Image (cartoon, rainbow, N blue to C red; front, side, top):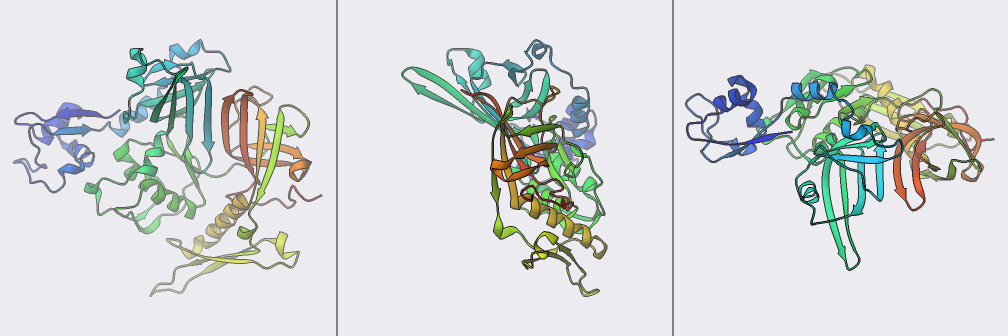
Length: 427
């Protein structure tokens, strides 16, 4: 976690850098974490001027965070927890008394959680753990499986004559990128002929978020920049989309770039057979197209190039519905992939299913996860043939019905442009 330091008499940033990092030349880490220093004069050594009494944020170095993550082990206090129990470490203090919980894992944004339980304000351990605006680190385990690493955002108490309760919510560590901008000291910030693998660590570094790449990142971007008012996640997700990548987090709280999963199913669910509980469908008819055409930008040096994806499901029915888009920061040689990526997103967003089952594990005892494939047969939801689906999002919850998993399913190949020849509603 970041630390703070109160500036003393005769302090300069190089001296503080030496105190915390062992060398004087890492003072820019401190400057980037303290935008209030922007515009100040210079000290005699050329570093930004600081005053006695200033409270400075001292950020952790990314390298140290990486090493901590790689060495992570199951805490001793979690090892005795039963296989189907939920426990939370809040700033390394174990809490396992939750009456209800909901944890949502998303394929193309960040995971979130919410928990509720009785609250005893007389206990000091409760007072220390649940204070507003402390942004405490959180690790969540299901049995001995780490399933979430993030930050506590809100803790709200409810006081009634016969009940005191607390509700807490939070998101995965990279969720801060969705809230925040780059420090003002970073601007102007422009990238020339750099790939996502080069860009991402730079914009994530001020917040100590590690970037992990599970798929090839594609070609460099000729020229891109981030605006002062643009949150970091919007900037990165826009670049990722142009390269046919999804952006989310893993259980360790790292920012990950990857492609949607294909292959064999990890579990099968059939209407009328446990653990199947229910299934429903949702179709967006206005976002389903027969032709999707991507076009590169025209410049003074060259004309634009284009590529058209044909959705034969509609074309064979004689239906024409066209959609065109300008593929910014895309070279002519990349326009086909950009268009296929857009087509994949169309399929992922135009047809989805909500599947609810009992429990959180597959038949082999493994926890169900986002971005994996499951097989479903549910005539009541217009799935007339046993069909493989991609888990787009997954919510683990506990209520008076017990442990339940709700999955949002999309067609396999969604987000990649690999679309099945036969759809689940076809017989």
